[in-house]
Image 1 (cartoon, protein in one colour):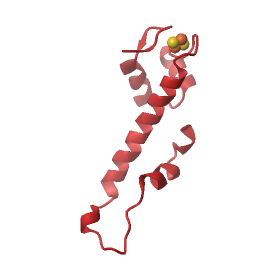
Image 2 (cartoon, helix red, strand yellow; image 1 turned 90 degrees about the vertical axis):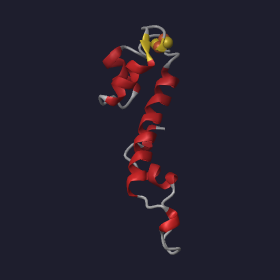
Image 3 (cartoon, rainbow, N blue to C red; image 1 turned 135 degrees about the vertical axis):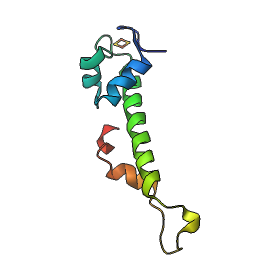
Image 4 (tube, rainbow, N blue to C red; image 1 turned 180 degrees about the vertical axis):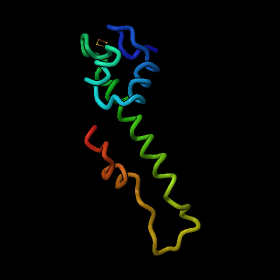
Length: 93
Ligand code: FES
């Protein structure tokens, strides 16, 4: 599926740009041209960036939050909203 029709850039190509370090629409545009034409795709690019970093935060959270079934009642699990707010990517939304 195309992410950017103007430049014929497919979603997997945008994902590759994000995985390689593009953290905003300008960086994606510099890397592959997506978003540098009419601008219709910019919302989709933003969604892809947010989704990528939300998934990274989620994966990081799963690695250190213990199973609540085995935790003492006095220790509450950290909510995903708190982790996202503390994330270096919180300003992307
Ligand atoms: S559809 Fe991406 S710039 Fe036009």
